[in-house]
Amino acid sequence: MPSSTYALFRQAILNRQPVTCRYKGKRREICPHVLGTKRRREKILAWQFAGGSSKPGGLPPGGEWRCMFVDEITLATITPGEWRTGDGHKWDQSCVDKVDIDVAKLR
Image 1 (cartoon, rainbow, N blue to C red):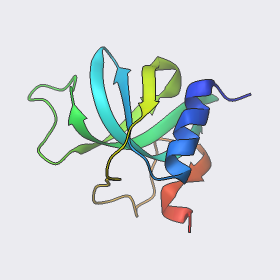
Image 2: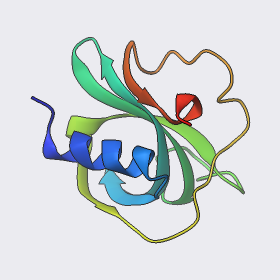
Image 3: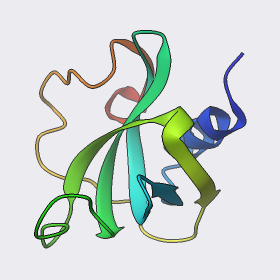
Image 4: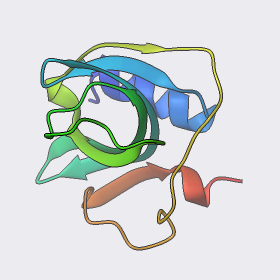
């Protein structure tokens, strides 16, 4: 059975809504694009457009793709705002092995 955070991300993808959450101790503003599992752990591929970053130099201007384990995400909430995406989601991603939902394949 999927976690409550997984269900929230699924809803955000279906409705193209941004999510605010904490991941690796940093506040993140993201738009989840792909949701599923990797090695049986729930995982998302998301476009992070604001918030903190664990990388030196922080988040690049405009944002960056992020691959995150759902069980390491806390305080996730759907927030009002514009749906955002970055270049390159048309390529085959390797973040999620078993894809449940992919925003690029929704109509």
